[in-house]
Amino acid sequence: MKGPDQPPQRLEVWSWTWPEIESGDDLADLIVGSAAQTPLADGDVLVLTSKVVSKAEGAAQARDKADVVADESVRIVARRGATVIAETRHGLVLAAAGVDASNVADGRVLTLPVDPDGTARRLRAAVVERLDVNAGVIVSDTAGRAWRTGQVDLAIGCAGIAPVLDLRGQTDANGRVLTVTTPAVADEIASLGDLVKGKAAGRPAAVVRGLAALVLPRGDDGPGAAALVRPAAEDLFAMGAREAAVAAAIRTDPLALSRFPSVVDGDLPFEGLAAARSDVRIDVRPSADGWTVAVAVRGQAPQDALVEAGRVIERAAALAAAHGLVRAAAGDMPDIKRLQDGWRAVHGATWNLA
Image (tube, rainbow, N blue to C red; front, side, top):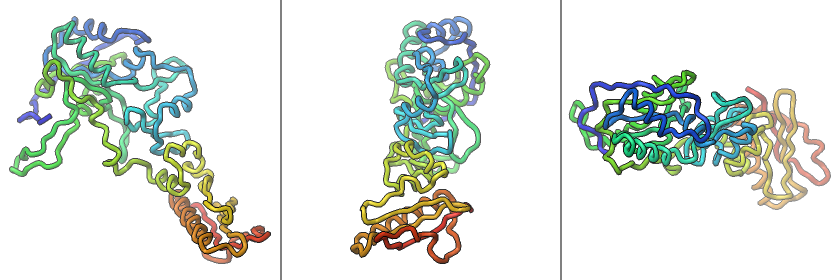
């Protein structure tokens, strides 16, 4: 959507207080009831926290959180100990794949709505039908951000509002043509709504007034918040730096890193390291301050075995670098004497914590 000629000079935003949401509750009824107290107008934007949507849709589960996170993840982006950053089936990259244990009963966790764009469309249609008001609807969720401390709310579902404005081709105050400016207005509105909702105040819904220029005509729901997900081919940061190095070094699919948590966490940084040939051997042992890695070939192995040994050595070095390990001072090969019985050592190194 092309942006308006001028941004609004004034906005109003207020929240609605709702009772605790239970599975099966009709959110449209709650919207209509709240609008009876503070009427909605054409061009308003409703912002609903995803938690009430998930609760109403019965997304609470009495299961171990780690198991639910694994089920909700399609790709592990980064992990450190119990902290997991994962991509969900929606394409969102969130801590714990959006699984949350706050504001739910003990022993239960809450997943994200299955189809937040679909929910936003249904609620918008209900508002149009029951209140005769053309409003936009945003479903928001809280997320952290790379390189920034703290969290903000962003849109994971929306209807009736373009999630991104395209200002390219317009000119700035100095007459320069804008070439890359595409503000994610749905995310900005989601964060604005969060300022008045509060996490524990029983106010899960907000109304933003003054953005009528961004609300689409009746019957046009727009592309939804799915349009905000950056395509994988354009993502320069698809994995954490450590995870990318580990995945390349142990030759595994990124999602499979969940099977090697000790590799990523650094408890056993060389776990999963393997050779592609049976005549190349890797021996990894803990040392006083780190780990000792020795690589050997069987007897008078052919040249391609030595090439594979070199590859293993390079992968071991990549794993070490990913975990901030430093190679000990050069010297004799570390304790490799037990690599005998026809095995010939070709490399040895000790990697210590910096």
